[in-house]
Length: 149
Length: 115
Image (cartoon, rainbow over all chains, first blue to last red; front, side, top):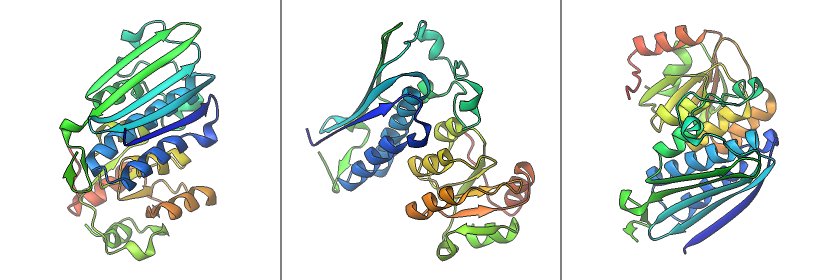
């Protein structure tokens, strides 16, 4: 493991929305992960963080950097998702109007996370919470400090 | 297109980035939905938007955007301007609505990106 980060996220804390993803992005940049990989991981982390803030009570956002790639893990305690297939459809959203005014909640979060991932897994239990694991693999160009790792 | 030209064409006020007016933007997009900006916009794009909240600045940072233009005369609050200043993201403010602002830039040669 090259780098591991973990941040606590509080549901409903819109003022802090994006702070954890920002820290993850800056750390990836700092250790020399290439711009394209950093951008993909940052977008996944940002959408995951928004999802926890919008839908859950609390959760954690983790990023793990290894020679294999960047793993983003978002785990929350919340209402869970009754129908994951439906939630994965572009445009399907249960977010309230307030969230839409912020430029989110249009049913693009989970599809976006999948789009920018090489591996994407989501599991959820109604009444307990949701777990999302996304990997941006090094085979799609994780170059560190100018050389492949 | 240089940011200076963007400013002139849109008759915009520079809120952040007077020192970056000679930087080039390769393409632009007009959008109020930040999730769509994240999904469909290429890095280094110029974003034109009517949203003025913190998520616009976050989205610009996550997506490596070049600069942000706030349209329809909507000015962000000082806190948002400060966020952009800290991150080195140029901000512009124009009275033109989104369609008109995009049209003027496109006509002057700044293209978009077709997914």
